[in-house]
Amino acid sequence: MVVASLTALAQPVRLRVFRALVVTGQAGLTPGAMAEGLGIPPNTLSFHLKELANAGLVTQERASRNIIYRAAYDQMNALLGYLTENCCAGAVCAAGADNSCAC
Image 1 (tube, rainbow, N blue to C red):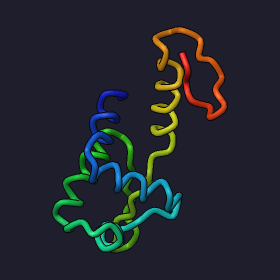
Image 2 (cartoon, helix red, strand yellow):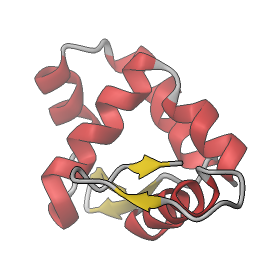
Image 3 (cartoon, rainbow, N blue to C red):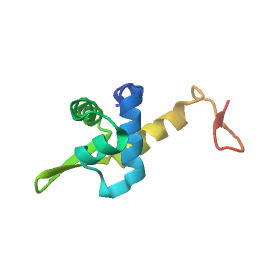
Image 4 (cartoon, rainbow, N blue to C red):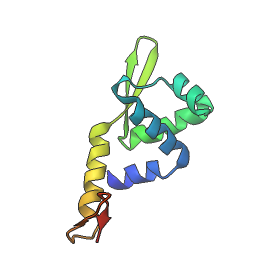
């Protein structure tokens, strides 16, 4: 899960798509709205959405003739939790002013 998620998010276009879905929230976005808003060709966007879905980072739901994509917040939170727990190789993280991990 972690490796697949990080691999998917390591690609700049996929990261932009995922960020857009996170910002949009539960309303989600159609591929057409994403393509137009992000300036990504539809065929390219389709490929990247498939990769994000395979990593479990986005969900899709058919709504009439449209497909609505949403960020998978549970998967995102699990990834963040894993990174937070393991950022210091098992050592206790020192609390920093910016809430970042300082080992």
